[in-house]
Image (cartoon, rainbow, N blue to C red):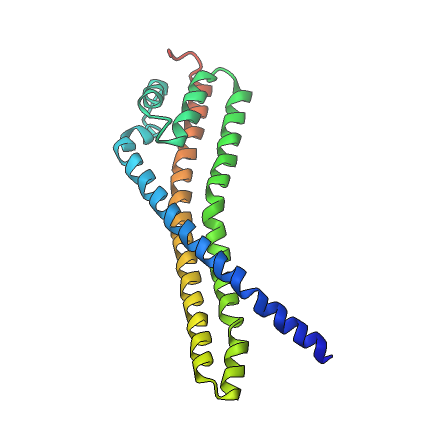
Length: 200
């Protein structure tokens, strides 16, 4: 039985380097997504009025004007809104556009959700793996080994939690934006159903 426990011990120690590399990649990815999300927030700010074209008092022409004013290169919802305007006479195509937007929104949220889940998980792995060598160092009186392994354990915990926290904040922001955009698209689709004869 001892050989089996030793094999597991060496296997867990062998996972330390992949865990550290994974944490470094997740942290870099978190910083990249944070910058991308901030740029998207800046891009949405000038178009706030157009994005609110789905207000209760809006009509079909207001939605069409909003679709013309939005830039697809900076706002993903602009392409979906323009497609709704183009196919406003076809309920089947409008439903397909809405479904495609929901799928695209879910894909857009996937990286941030991955950070939220994998960040703390890898941080926990990076905490537990060095504890074995640290305890061995403590038992043998090797204080230097103990300190080094505990330092790695604490550092991985912090990095993992920070990556997870960034992922959580990005997920919250993007979910809110996608909910607002989907509300606009659904309102536009319903409005085209009520007023099919509006001018382009």
